Image (cartoon, rainbow, N blue to C red; front, top):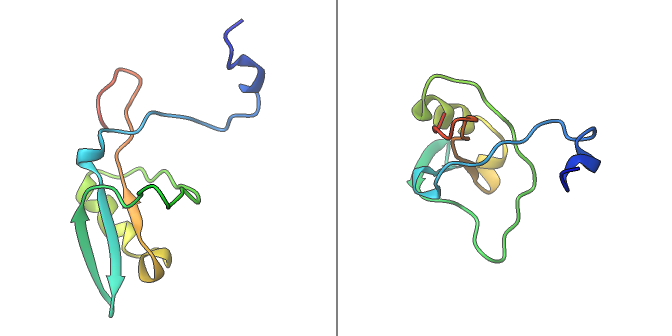
Length: 89
């Protein structure tokens, strides 16, 4: 029995994240979205939750992230997930 099978009935989904070098961080300040390359998280931050957005490109995902309220008060990290074959989506 694989070690993770005990919780597999409770898991709603999982996927590995793509390389952090592909990550974008979106912040909206004074109504204007600002995008920086690289992850938002550092040692004192934590992941509060996530959404999986199915869209055609990283650019489109970045546009959608700029609409989230958290982008106005903190930041939204946009990172591709990897499909089962290991390719970044």
